[in-house]
Amino acid sequence: MIRPLGVMFLALLSAGCADQTRPSAPTAEIRAQQWTARRAVLEGQQSWVLDGRLAVQRGNEGGQARIRWAQTGAKFELKIMAPMSRGTYLLQGDQGGVSMETPDHRRYDAPDLATLMTTHLRWNLPVAGARYWVLGLPAPKPAPTNVVLDEEGRLTDMAQDGWRISVLDYQLVGAQNLPRKLFLMANDLQLRIAITQWPTPPH
Image 1 (cartoon, rainbow, N blue to C red):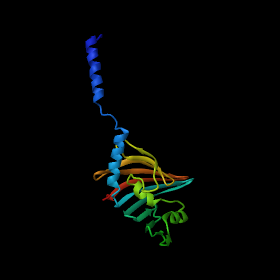
Image 2: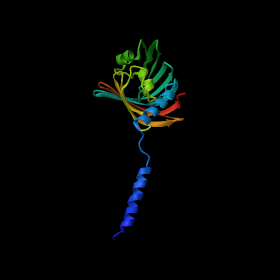
Image 3: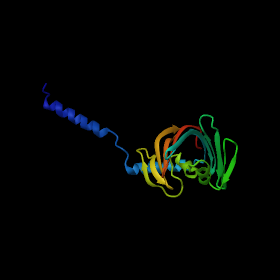
Image 4: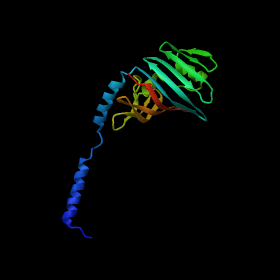
């Protein structure tokens, strides 16, 4: 069937107008403004509790565990609950030092968490930085590099302090979008964190 040229022209014109009304992707400037506003809110979040799952991979070795992480300012308590009734590792500390209690109730102390975990677990979760990364923020220092934002001005990728941090998914917690899944990598160590619940949202 041959359509009249006038009808075809009107159809094309309507399609063109419809395309022009579609919302365009935010510009880099708008995303930067969203990111600045988001950081201003989240950087004030000092206390929270989260539940999640942790997968650790280093070379050919790996494992999984459930975690409960409570943060109050610089003070933290991190429970790493191994599967198959293998017990719980309890890590606690602040800027003055850290301690770890093993499933057989042995206690170890160290000036920093990296030394403690590397010595006894052979891997390390950089809590000092990750306490910000789980909120979708860079730590205050050192300055992050290769920062990538999504269309809503949320962090999706960056490098900081020898780690690559990727936020793979977000979830709505109260009025804020917070990370649901993160991937952390440093040399041959890979950590995957899936946050299943924020029993106490940041406040």
